[in-house]
Amino acid sequence: MGSQIEPKTVHIGLGSNLGDRVANLRAAINAIQQLGDSIGMSAVYETEPFGVDEEQPKYLNMVVAIRTNLIPTVLLFKFLDIERTRGRTRNRQNESRTLDIDILMVGSQVLETPELVLPHPRMHERAFVMLPLSEISPQAVHPTLKLTVSEIAARLSDQGVYRVGEIDELAD
Picture 1: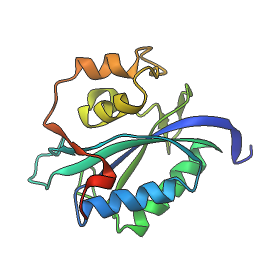
Picture 2: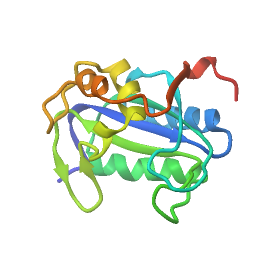
Picture 3: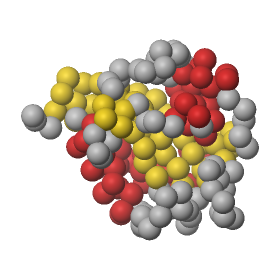
Picture 4: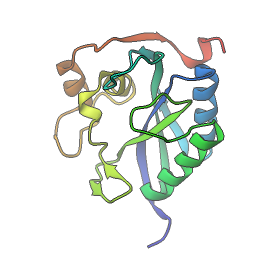
């Protein structure tokens, strides 16, 4: 199998709660836009840490979308490299991080490998994913739930997620 497919829309979740959070998101956006055509970018949301037992700084989260012909596993490894260049370490699950890049959906593709599950298996439970995703792709259909992004987002509580503005408006 090659490293390319017919171009697909890829929705990508970004998050940062360590270091210069805005600069981390901007660096991720710039790197991701080198991998395909940018077709959408949500506002930035500030988020209470989700699913953790320890005190952590708040996250900045957003979603971007690109059209690319790179296969999902190639994208995954490129995203891991981007995270590492921003100082991301992986010591334990749900730890604070300089940068987190998650592939949420690749078109309507369903995939389950040891490295990657599509659509992202917990995205539909997380307001910090679904609210920004509903900004840029409200009518996109979750490949396994068969609900639109806006329908899923409407079912979630806010979970401590607050819109803080467009990335270009935020100070580093």
